[in-house]
Length: 323
Ligand code: KIV
Image (cartoon, rainbow, N blue to C red):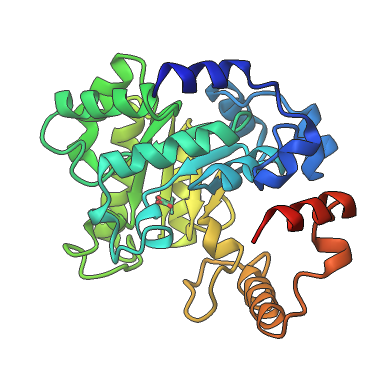
């Protein structure tokens, strides 16, 4: 950047609200978007202590995944207790066919965006596949990056008793860990697909023992994915930290759903545990098709309401000066 460019920047006056409009950026004041519900205005920052109190009092915990600034801001504005930058990011946003393809740098990029929007919910990020498996020290290095560069407050790790030493090491240096047991999407190849876990006694015992070992290692919460609801209830009753279920029945301390699933960003196959609470795909289809049609038929933009005017004298002067 040249010195002239720098001085031009420092001399530039602050943008007025009107001038900001043409930038198509999210307004800094949530009231301008109409998304500052009374509820979000009254909310306090969610902490681990708060989550543990919710578990004690039987108040359900709502966790939602977010992948960018707008989804992070929606979690903040509409009452989520925990925002999770899930590694489902790989599939739902980046077009990979598996979470195992996601890199730490990609995760960091999205964490930063979510962190700019999600302030009040407790903010957790998945540690990507391969970023915590070699050694507890490698896990510490990468988790520190997620906290320092990504702006998250805690990390989530998939695995059973074998990752307990890593969970212990991370929590010992003050990085809160959310454990994730049951169906482990990062291990879908070894599990021969995305299958419900804990359906027989031996498998149920293994999920149960994992949850106990990870709580003992210091996890502040445990995600239970795709397990029979009676097992979800049993584990929840035995642990003292909150459980967050996804396909683990109604009696866990809280629930989590992937943003794109709950919003129905697409139709077609859905897992049994998914409920669609909105229909974004239909709205996107309606909006984009209507826009394309309006452009092609020249119905958009209108002259009066959607175009700018120019002073007639200025226009005549302009024409006189051009060939
Ligand atoms: O990556 C993710 O979105 C998750 C949730 C499904 C728990 O881990």
